[in-house]
Amino acid sequence: MRDLMRLSITLAVVAVISAALLTGVHNVTEPVIEQREASEYVEALERFFPEFDQFQTEKINGDTFDLVYDQAGDKIGVMATVKTQGYEGTITYNLAVDNEAEIIGIRIISHSETPGIGDVITTANFQDQFIGKDFEDPIEDGEDVDSVSGATLSTGAMISSIRRTVTTIGENFLGMERAAFGFEDLADGLYRGTVDGTYGPLTVEVEFREGRIRAIDIIEQNETEDYFFDAYPSIPRKIIDKQQLEVDVQTGATLSAERIISAVKNALEGSPVEESGGGDN
Amino acid sequence: MSPSNPYLDDLSRGIVRENPVFRLLLGMCPVLGVTGYLINGLGMGLAATAVLIASNVVIAALKNFIPPQVRIPCFIVVIATFVTIIEMVLQAFQPALYEALGVFVPLIVVNCVILGRAEAFASKKPVLRALVDGIGVGIGFTLALGILALVREVAGHGTIMGPDPESAILLFGQGFEPMGLFGQPPGAFIALGLLLGLTNVIFKKFNIK
Image 1 (cartoon, rainbow over the protein chains, first blue to last red):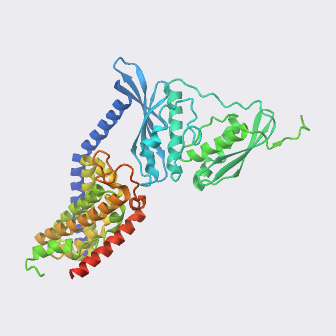
Image 2 (cartoon, helix red, strand yellow; image 1 turned 30 degrees about the vertical axis):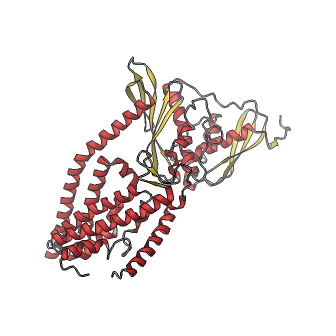
Image 3 (tube, rainbow over the protein chains, first blue to last red; image 1 turned 60 degrees about the vertical axis):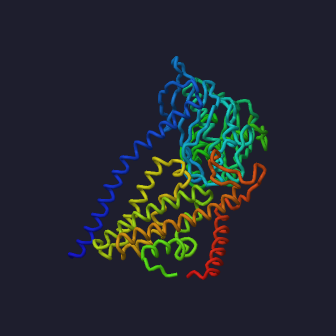
């Protein structure tokens, strides 16, 4: 019994002393770290917005958007601090856009992508292709920007996150609106569309009749299972309910959700694989 | 070959005869993980050395108070405390190095070099000798990481003092295409294997035991 007491007390004393030490060091280093991060952020602001004078912070869905003003008090752009799911963990980055929602700069703050592979997202080579793209651009892999082969997941995550962020900024702070994808005039029939998914193609079949999307079936998918089942079947249901492709994607399965949406879009842009029998109308 | 001074012996043993990397093959995880660039290798070595010296001294000082049944948890807490301190200090004052070393800084906690010295040496010897031992093994570890990192950086990137482009010296000019393999983790195994072979040859030749 006495022995047990001695063991516990020794451990407790060691733990308490170590906790006290760590608290002390933490109190010394934390302000230094915070100050450095803040000054790095201001430096980045000054680099992206040379006329930068002050900013005002807004929060949307957990991401921070700083509206940047010049000395005259005019808004000169928006700097977003965004977190997105990369291949191995969270990627946090700054995205600077001007008043036309044109991308001025990207700065990766922290990431845990594979060294030598996924960390190409930090290179100027990868980031520079976004500069000058704006709200009207698709910012889509293979269209106006490219993912890096071998690091498709890391770079693909960045591409779609940047597209979402530009959209969010444009719609919320710059009074822009995305033209809805119109499909009212399509011929009735069964449409099929395919996009590249996480581990292979994702194919949908869309049944279109009398000006409305009636059904969306996923006939092939190679997504991460958990993410996919977070996105399916809620995304097809939302599209059918709203009869538009601009539906909210839930966080946590953003990539799979967006792929389903673009597969449906891809389907409706093509021609029907089988015309529906005209007997009824 | 037999230094009568025990301190000198403690110091040199960690560097040469019981070099943690080249002779004992301990702490391989950071050895393979962060030796892509010389600066990172040396930074890792110094961080581990700081933890090693501090934990060696504290454990030697506490050895009479710690009951043998709970010595391992106590050692781990002491080591983890110093590692966390180093981590916070690096993050505050050496952010570039902190970024480069990444997860390998917290992993110093489970570096078997440190727990090994605590268990095999510091917990049995007086404080001063534990201090000297920590310095010796630390130098040996840093040296080994430095050599491996130098080989890998020259072969894998064609530079010295990278990755910061301002300090990086291009050894073979702009047109040189380095052997990228050596910059990757598999290249670390190959480079380490070659260096182990080389040290074995040298040790045999000079008959060091």
